[in-house]
Amino acid sequence: ADRAGGAGFERAAPVGQGVWRDRIRPGGTLFYRVPVDWGQRLGATAGLGAASGGSGYADGALTLSLYNPVRGSVEEAYAGYSGHPASAALAPLPPVAYANRHGFTDPGKGMRFAGSYYLVVHLAAQTAGVFGGGPYDLTLRVRVSGTAGPGPGYAGRSEPAELFEVTARDREAAAGGRGPEGSGGPGTATGPTGLRVLAVAGLGTGTALLAVLGVWTLTARRAAGAGAGTRA
Image (cartoon, rainbow, N blue to C red):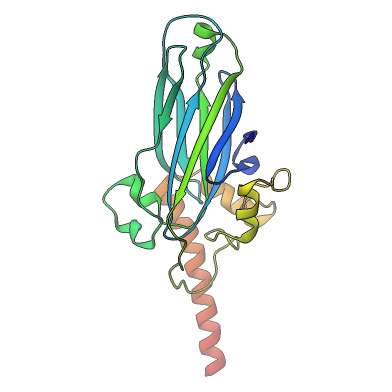
């Protein structure tokens, strides 16, 4: 199916399991978001079509990047381009699980939340100097395997709400419908909550995770304290 990628996290196009077609120009970056629930495994491959002219080789022309729900970098894949079809595929990743936070590799640790994962495709500007300005055919293959299961029993709720959840609305949008214009999934709202997530996105992965979980833990503690006061 055809699906135009968005220009940034907040305008990421929803996609689910399947094959999605788009077009991309040199220097361009396209954003897509995929709902991945607890216990599910994500895989993705970005393929670039044949050039209409030119000859030579563009090293590292195509980049496919994966970001988790707090927009922390998880994994990247690259492919050079000789004018013939080329593809970049993410390395195998573990299913989404709370226990992944204790993993030994950074990609594995990144798969520690359910929610919207972001696939970002970039075509290097240097491609234009070798094969022309395009646009080039882009094929995004997405695999979401495994049965969705319950998440950990967190105390309290995340801020923004539903950041670490996959809702029926997310699944519907990924299957074929588009979300509201400018909607990049949970955590993209404007206002204090939206700004908090945008600030988190600008931090390093570890710091970002701590920042979000810190807010969540604080909320849970306040709720617990209020409950204790009531019981007293």
